[in-house]
Image (cartoon, rainbow, N blue to C red):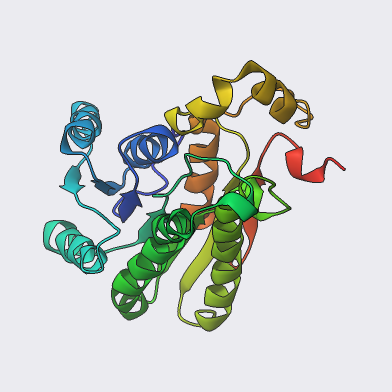
Amino acid sequence: MATTRALEGRTAIVTGASRGIGRAIALLFADAGADVVLVARTQSTLDDVFEQVSRSGGRAVAVAADLGLPETPADVAARALSEFGRIDVLVNNAGGNSFMVPLADMRFSGWEKTMRLNLDSTVRMIQAVLPTMTEQASGSIINVSSVTGLRGSPLMSHYGAAKAAVISLTQSLAIELGTTGVRANALVPGWIATDLTDFLRDDEGLEHSLLDRVPMKRWGRPQEIAEGALFLAGDASSFMTGQSLILDGGLSVNP
């Protein structure tokens, strides 16, 4: 639970908000006082998050949409403005990976799908909200990357490349927006226990090999990542831009 109403009076768009990390971020933001635009592909799971926000006294709108379609981000931004009149925070959380394969054996269609999901939709959402944020002279863009984007990711080169690009994009964007009042930072989770990592946790040998490199020897929790997002969204990080907030149990510093 948020200890203060750090986002009171602000509007946040959270993509991939129906489950896992995105769900945890959306609920924490609502608890912190934000009006939340919930975006995901499946209406039923979005409705569950919407109802939980409403029961807690928060305000939200659920937008079932496919961010892989070029027109969707502009529609989402327009919906946020029509419902709440402003856009203060964008969390580009939609993304993921569901397969592991050597690059030599990868079908290029799999590479393209991964880039569309993890990188292209992020770029389009940023472009959709920037006119509003720059006019307001304020805003926080939070791009969710992954620890796989920080180092070599064998068998997940497609996902690692996409998430590394998200970090580079965030750094470039922060420089471009430096004097506008709009900040951009990357949130970099390690191995988090969500349904998106079920395929890793279902293989006991693979799970052991992954956690063996994590100094804390455990999976992260979605709530732990949400707390990092809350920090990046609010005034506590007002002098922070172009940075990567790494929450990975120490994985990235393990030789």
